[in-house]
Image (cartoon, rainbow, N blue to C red; front, side, top):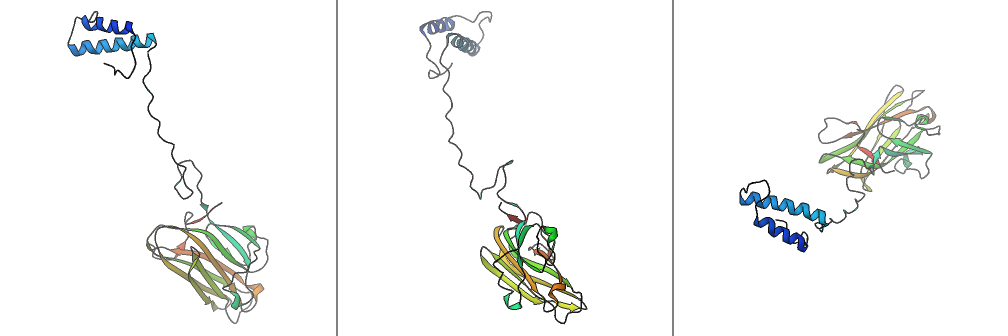
Length: 255
């Protein structure tokens, strides 16, 4: 039978209910008490609807869900707060080796870096209108997926129009969460009119997103206008055997 809280029957409905309880359902030939009660309940429900009986109460509404924070994972279909790549700020290369560790204040351009070699002597393909040797400062976020020592590095290659006497001085400096985790500085080894060097800095990290700042630049000791220097930025996580190029989802920035 319906609960008394569901609706309040009128006198006519109550009288009919007593009649139905006293006599077997029409055309059913009696049957078990349970069957009789089920049929009576269905008829009372139908009668209630015809007479405009009250509807059952609505279920209580759940409280509104709190708004997602900027750091919370986004639901499917929502825009991510991070985009692939980091911002590469292009600065004029320092004029002397003494200034290598101090990035110049002014910039001459910028682009979004998602990986691959950077030609420090020619950035027009990146949309930078500057003719000269440049230094690169990366700003963004580094996504770390493995616990242990993560190393950031770069493979530097240089060619010169004439045979230089001394190779260029180059530097790699890395900051995570506004704290410098390492700096590597070398003079390129020369072979005829070519030079090369590999710079590395690392730290023990846990999985997560880390605010990244990276500065790299070279200062040729001679023939600076003829220097052709390429920097290929690399990473090595605990599960990697060697330094490798960045994956698209390892370098991020906020729009």
